[in-house]
Image 1: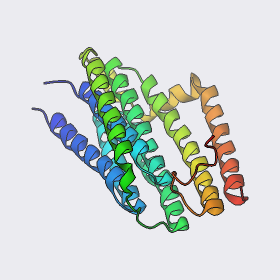
Image 2: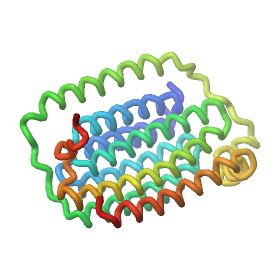
Image 3: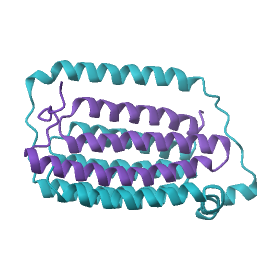
Image 4: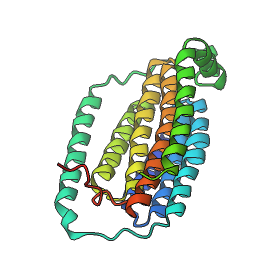
Length: 168
Length: 101
């Protein structure tokens, strides 16, 4: 058993535990904190998949920017604990059943995925997933989608200000 | 010993199902948003696992775009939550049934 597998197992268990905590925590603040730890553990898994750039982006954008937005809104709205309602049981059963069913179908489908992983040459091992290669691809082949995404972010920013400001 | 990218696919599937369970079960709109973020992260993990298996970086670029779109989605979605809270005084999605037939 290699060190990568041990690390992957630890990160996977911690990711799933904190993701479950997001769902089952009573107050939204605890959910948000569990979500931050989920993002950090997922960044660890990304590093094990040799996606260093995306792991850094995960910490910067998700655990940084998006979570600050979430915490800001939670504190702005001053939300208390959710009161559990008894008539939720049927929809809970239905939700749990469909989640388990989807997991079973996905597991059967993923089990048929071939297990061979591309072996990288010595040169590729140096460059795979680094900021240089990913950045070069984004700014050459994927330049138009990149510009479209920057436009989308601008529109989202303006839209967020407009929606949050006026009364509906 | 199974390869890590292959195992990561199952982790992503489990994470996606957890997120879907949260979206279906929770009634707080903010927690529903957090569960949507979990599902987006599961999709990202699948992209990265397949990128490692194929040995190219298109999956990394897809994950980059997913992260950017998720940031836009979170900004607009949270603004909508604030607007709904202002007009209705609640973020419980069971209270929002104006569009019910």
